[in-house]
Length: 430
RNA sequence: GUGGCGGUAGCUCAAUUGGUAGAGUCCCAGAUUGUGAUUCUGGCUGUUGUGGGUUCGAGUCCCAUCCGUCACCCCA
Image (cartoon, rainbow, N blue to C red; front, side, top):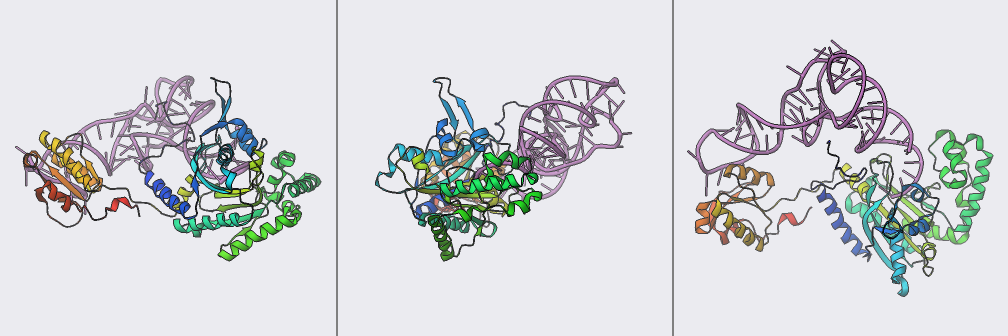
């Protein structure tokens, strides 16, 4: 690997061997979204830097040190490769006045970019899939999102290795009140604080609650709780969400220390977490962000949504042993000789007209080597054409899997022999 | 951004105290010159991640750098 022309660090090529798993996932996803009435939104990968600063928050790690930001030298504008999808989605909804006639259920998927140190389940270009329900106020959409994600885990066979953590952040006033109490509390226990905690004391005191440092555990446990600051409306909203989960029989754990990293959340926040992926165990996360639309210049509209890390989710699928079979053609077209090669091109088209998946052998070679390729391709049949067959418009059909003798027949008859009309196995992955 | 471990053939891995770089697999060809998992025979592939240094001599020791990996931080 001395070639200097390599992929950028933390950005991966998706090779043919892995593509079937992605395709399986995407196909399943589309059906699932349709079942809930969500519609796709595609936005540019590049946005004005100001969008993310405004939406995510100036003092977050993402904005401070993880964004791919550069100046477009042609016009001097500051551009940023999107680090997440919500900001763009909301921006587009406002820009195209999508909310003028009520709430909208939207979804998006695609690559996101964050300049972090690569690690399992964390890459500099990674893929997120997410949904945003814009313009819906009540707790019913929060619940819908939790029900639909729970269904997705069921569809994927992952229910046993993912669990739900839930919290409520309340409104801006209660968060501000809690923040003051928290800072005062931590200052009173400054002797116990580690370096990280001291650094975060004023920038992001909520994060201190998340510390994994064992020497701080007791002190953190006794810290003022956000839950105690929630006002009546926030409590009612939270109760309704919990009630919805109970009604649906979905288990959850209240995690008072669950804090989302982006500034725009309020009330409901949640994470679906697995312990099978090492340190990056959050597979799906989201919550409510009632202030964001107005914050980005739209007419105020409540909203909630979530995003999932596709690499993490697929990593989990691989971990539990889900592996779609590699796609195999119905027919491998062996052809030896000049006349045979010409006839084979036509024969391939005829077979495909009948709905068969056909791989044409290319690049010449003898019967033996071509038969080896036919076997390796996984095809059910080898359709063999030598100059003998080509001269009379016939082909030899040889079953490669299971029983059956090789038969030499007219091309039209080969269509039947190769099982056209029977639903081809290769169109459904499972 | 910080720290631990690692980098030898396309892939999985060997190589005593520094002494000429190997095996399996894969691929290619042949074993009745028109026929596939098997078996047998033969063959191909490497600037040992990169660049310096020590040495008569470095895959092996030292430094730097890149990449990977795990964790921290953070997050999907």
